[in-house]
Amino acid sequence: MVNKPSIMILGTDHFEKSAVQDYARTDELDIFTPEKQLEITHVLTILKEYAPTKIVLEYPLKYQSSLTVEYQEYLDGKFKLSANERHQIGFQLARELGHKNIFAVDWNEEEGVPDIFTYMQRQETERSKKIFNDLEKIIAEANEKSQTLTIREYLLFLNDTKQVRKNHQLYTDIALLGDNDNPIGANWVANYWYYRNLLIYKNIESLACEPDRLLVIYGVGHVHLLNQLVHEGDHFTIQNVMEHLGVMRAKEKNAQP
Image (tube, rainbow, N blue to C red; front, side):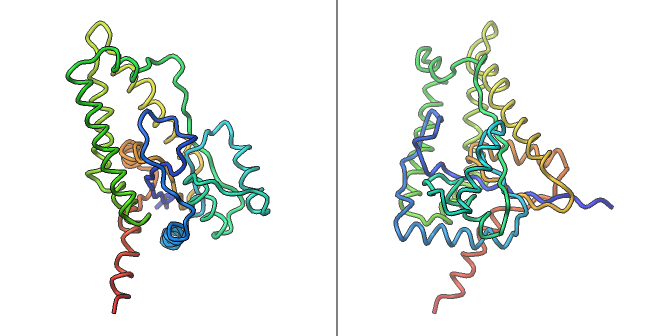
């Protein structure tokens, strides 16, 4: 019997907005307050219980060497962490676990595919208006949760099955835009969004060896497809991130007088 490597996918918000290329962005949290830093520490404590052997980040694979240098400078005390979740969760967790490196798997290039959001703004239809309206609702709800919940609770909200599905549905709705002569939505979803996530999955799979325990930290919009690909590919033993994040909730309740 072959033992499969283990994988756990953690969907996140992007804590640092300056580097975000997404069309819609949530409000930026002040992640450096003492309260939020303590909340980050709580999340790291939970994730350490999974004991990942490799931490995988939303960072372009072609710049792996730059990521390696950045991480090594951090280990050497020569690099100041930004608010980015790659640093706040990925780098700090990798250091605490004694990892020598951290891994990039992303691809994010839109050359040759339609500019779908400009199209939706210029070719307004009932469908495109609904997509923008649904997107605004998702962002508004995420903003409310991020301001009222702890980081761990916010991650639980983002990774909830219903929320993950709601994020993914935006892409399936975009795929319906256009007409038979110009199926622009399907073109963009297939040749950018699905293609991107297939490449991410391929890059993740190529990292894994039999005894590995991978922790993949990615924007929550990717979680539905990555979970689907991991499940259908059947190359990993899948760990439920909601069960791991829920550990602290149980401990907090037990600690109450």
